[in-house]
Image (cartoon, rainbow, N blue to C red; front, top):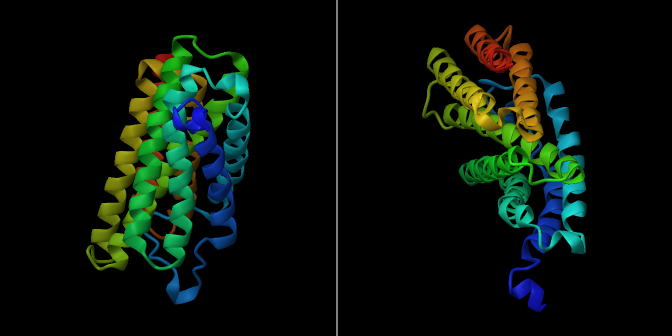
Amino acid sequence: MWAVASGDSSPQVLTCAAAAPQVLLPVFYGPRFRGPDSPPDVIQPAPYAFTVWFPIFASSIAYAVHQARRTARTRTIWRAAGWPLAGAFASAGIWAPLARAGRFWSAQAALVSFAALSETARRRVARAERRNELRAAEVAAVAPAAGMLAAWGQAACGVNLAALLVDRTIVPAGRPADTVGAALLATLGAFGAAAVSAPEGSTVSSRFYAGTLLWAFVGVVIGQRRRSRSAAVTAAGAALTMLAVAASRR
């Protein structure tokens, strides 16, 4: 108890406590939208894209188990990246019941927290990788979770915000909604290009981030190719920009 109170193992405890709800709540108590209750489709990716949650859940549990070991308590990286990752797990878990209860603005706030915290963790992990501060087993444990959570958190935040703005009639459906959707996709593409071009862009966590964001963009292209040409073209342009930046680094 003293170790927990003094902060030595608090990140470990909170990470394990938050990892389980992150997996269980969206699966068993997530929102169920059918027919007219479905959110507006503005930049929604194709249904297959959401299978990315399976590797995200698996990598999150693997990271939680790895960092819970006694030998990880004194590792600086688990304190630096552990707190924001634990917060990201908790935010993802909180989102599910909020969305199911119809508290959509609160759910959007949870997604923003999810994206911001996981991106903070990803950057800290990437810097540690670049400085060779992580062993190979530690990279394998934390890099997939941090990279995929950050990318999918940002994508989910943008997709949900576009639907929420139209659903609440803040942005009219039709061309205004398409314009907002394209702007959000372009912003996500700028985030992705910046991550790839950063000094840490060649790290394992950054590669998982880039791959997951590309997966989201391809999902939008496939999902919107018939409904919204502007969304499909913008998503394709964002993906190609990321690939071009990565190629120029090489």
